[in-house]
Length: 185
Image 1: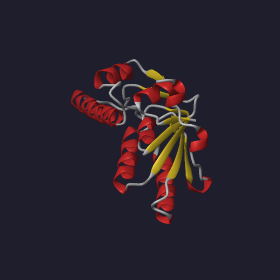
Image 2: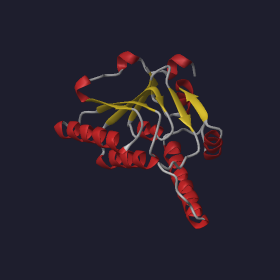
Image 3: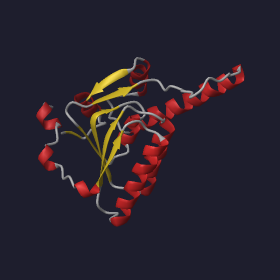
Image 4: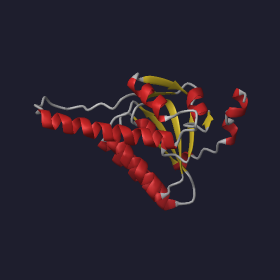
């Protein structure tokens, strides 16, 4: 298949600025709440018309991304996602929540093993460390499951796990080949 056949023409994409929302910056509680509320308001206005979500994010809380993904799937919101610049780490899950997904030609996605961050110095007894590790492994398994659900057969669990362990940068063409992206702008 040639590159031209894989790409969706920009002229075929209908963009309505009145029904668009932006996710700029890291995935945190504040941005999550603002974006979810904007999407809910647009959905209330017209539940049949699609909503465009433009994402430029370095990632952040994977559990908030799971919450957003589950909300969009449960509410059956016709969401189209657009990655511009980058949709890294956990924000890949935001991007994959779209029924139709597009990326800029110069957009990159980064996948890596999940990271547990602490805002302050804490002491972790061995039992607590084991619990934290189990939690991270469960979250990473769920992350992999969602990514593979939106991938084609060219990407499997073993390959994705290796990519995450090696902190891999994926360009728009590769994302298109794997099925993460439906078209490149």
